[in-house]
Length: 78
Image (cartoon, rainbow, N blue to C red):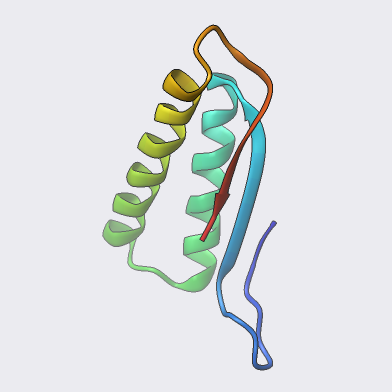
């Protein structure tokens, strides 16, 4: 879930867990982009973060699970 916690807790926590497949990469990108937009990040900075998260998730899908990551999760927290 991606949310903005207030009242003494961390503001802007995003946790995403998806099955490690290339089909889930757009889900990760979209959720991070929406989360950053809701936090008011400038468009250019948000695009850089989305790109970095996408590269990390892509690397996890392609290299952490050779032969397919079906059933494995990629977890992103930030």
